[in-house]
Length: 545
Ligand code: SF4
Image (cartoon, rainbow, N blue to C red; front, side):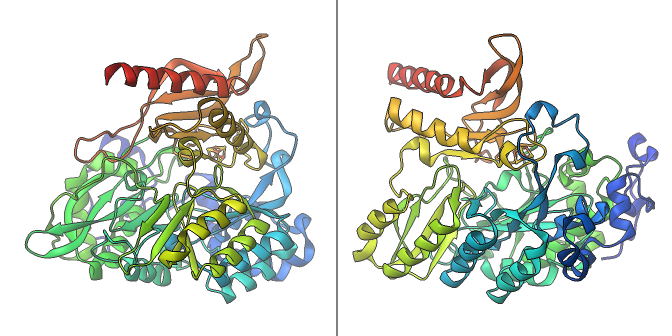
């Protein structure tokens, strides 16, 4: 994978974007300096040997706010600091002495032993907190550094890890929650996904990337594949049969870009090698000077996919890739909610918590319910929902009832089914507004006022412009910010993006929601605002039928 040639310099590159492949090895900012000073993966030994014994006060600041992330640890936001002060306080003023701990669940599937271990860690060490994230992780809160080694021991004993769950490295690899069981899946990509995790996660070859690197590998288009740095999506080649279509350069946040098709067909066995080639391009050519330009999407946008493919083939793979056809894409996101037949004749049942919030006690109860209904595993979706897999047909209705009994609804209203929320001000130091409780309140209000409706209206609630819950890809995307309240003072509110959606590749309903300058609401007014939008949409639709 050696870099063998140097591309022509554009005027911007002549100033230096910090690209290693162009000889810019000296760190150009504090984050790059931290990574160069010591590989972030090395912080684990200090956590186990020093910080877990010395407590929060013993933690070196460069580890605390930098390298800890490589082990899934972020300091939590101190309670009681309002969103207006997020941007003006120093990082240490926002830090609580507790951590968020992200457990990566590559591919999204958990057996009952794993589910019970997470549940027990939550109740014992995390004040019963647990959120299912929109990247198939489970996030715990209120973690003390003293407890981290014991938590790792328990997780790793059942094959789970927090390694590189955050940080400038390969994050959790999204996979279809029905991989291996779906009646519509032609090739199960799990072997490729497992190989990538086993070979490259926690590997120092990729532990210093310019920024985070998000992946998905799925036969079905049941992933937000357009917004990842790299996605492999199932496709049938007319001559070579089933394989995977490669997409690169997607990402949201403040400069949202959709991933682009590279136009190549990759057989399952070659997916890990191609994945490693793309990550290597990012490591070597990715921009490191400015954090906000350090995602792969900026390089892809500057190069174009033709050049990207050429560099991948010539400098990293040493061979040409086969041209490939475009995959057939669904018109709507596939969320797997409800009762569905598997290809082996058993069933899976998809159920919705509200905005991904669960608890350790609920997960423990879930494990018991799942076991009592003849299943041995669950999976998490990138829409903050969960599935129970391998259910005998005659047990499905009893399972739906039992899930409802523990607060998980397999026949949810549109509102509950299609609303997501990021972490928000409760725990996130970057947040400007509260999100989870607002999301729960919003769903309850819409269910009460509008009941269920026969339309799919997606609502993504985000606590700041970083768009962790994909602001730009929902019918109603909400970006947290301060707005002017009724008495002229600044209060929590949202900018509204309307009409976003994924699945754009064949000219379908895709694209980002439009951000309209005047479209803002205070957080207090949010339920009434969304209700008005929904009523207008529904009456307009009735009128045009
Ligand atoms: Fe935090 Fe902002 Fe991401 Fe929400 S969108 S989790 S507030 S960084």
